[in-house]
Length: 388
Image (cartoon, rainbow, N blue to C red; front, top):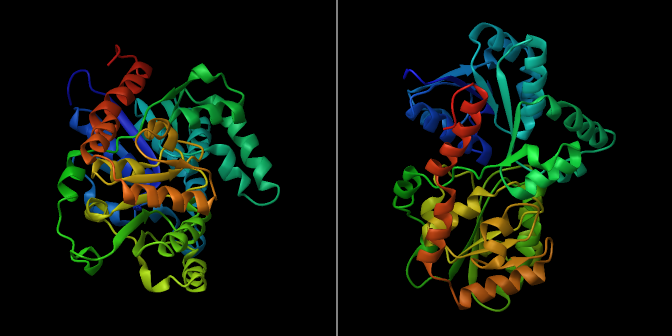
């Protein structure tokens, strides 16, 4: 290691293909490339991102410690809670200079583990999504409990990083912490690898010359992404002109979405191929990328589509899209759950597409180098080094 390098640990649920997992892996690689010793600490080592782990980063996985647990019943939050004791042990024995807890679903576990370990390691929590909207979708007393946990535990952090100003504002409201104590750092979305992957070949008949326009969405098939509204909007578009819709992603709402497509009479023009490791060739070729979410933190797929030069339409959900699109200057923003407004915006962009180079220039604001500089400034200041 370099003389001024530090031992940094990055803690996240695992190596799934989720947006938070991908951004976390990007940051870990970037820190290691800058000469720091980096541990990627995960609750679960299974997932497609395992193959993308850099040899410069040491993987510390806890899942082998609880083989007796029912894996099928373990979601991200449960894996994180099961990791508290193992993470506390890691902190006592490895003593990294700083830990970056990289997503909402692991932050409480990281804060509790450091408390149990009585560790002097500095801890930074990264808030990757809205706290309050996701709590709204939690059932029963768990909703209030989660908000109370956030208000109590987040005050234990040495620093809080939010992925957008909207998320930072939300954290301040939920936790009653001073807004000025929360730093906004946009995600490291645009990478050299993205530039390479978008040029990969794509053998899909819907993109053949002369075929109808293809609308694209990417995300887990869950309530947050509100693909029901997208399907209803697509049905309105199809009533006006020929078009097709591809939704890349997997999730528990697949049966409902397939049934809705049949009910709307558009099933033959809708494809749900599941999780695709490299969605960028689709973005390069799509006529419009649509984000229909009810809430977000900073939707990386919207930035990735722009980096590919793909026109975009988005809901004006909390939070991120308005910041990414500069209030609608780079793509229409429509109210959440309004399929008529969403369809109108899609038709408008199909009729008059924006300049792809202008979209790429805006996406460049979310580069990995810029984010890495800002993250290391926070992490290294906490470790006692001069400003990065």
